[in-house]
Length: 117
Length: 108
Image (cartoon, rainbow over all chains, first blue to last red; front, side, top):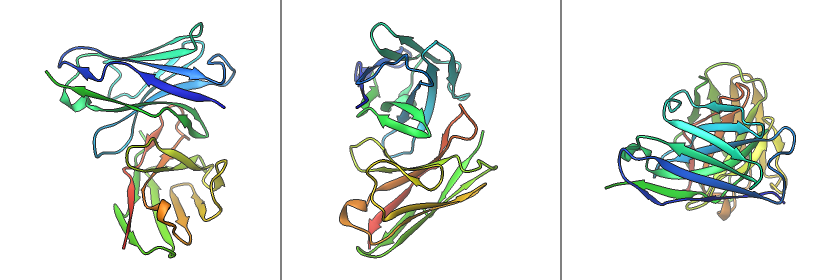
């Protein structure tokens, strides 16, 4: 059974770069037709797709975040990562990794990242 | 960008009754629509994909319908565990996926 797990710092200072990693278990990140995504949810608010990466490295980003987002993949570690630069308090959210198929499934449990000095 | 609009924002329903949630797309998404359930402190769970196909393990009381721009999620015989927030999401405009803002189903 495919499982995803986010990891990374829970606190980031304003203007710095948020970095998170998603570890995939129960399957290969390099399997065909596999895109891997990051989604976030500010406290008490809805879901926002951040971006996705194909196992080969092709990336797609939400236009509203594109200038600050980098998603990368490490097939040797079965992981993919998110970097969000120049963060502000508005980037405080629970960050999820998920696999998009017909709908996103499965999801990681999510990790809360707070932007504060 | 395809904008997904859900209504109502909050739906008050008694246990055992039926809940009907709506989702509208700003342009046609064909049947490429999914529904999710999210409980406090948990990740969203995929309920429905392809507008009407239940995901693995989802009870039959959850049903989806619609195509194009108008979609409905119906929860029949509401159980206590069904009170949650529900999101719709289009995946027709791949890979620029977008979500609705959510509908909270609360106890009446």
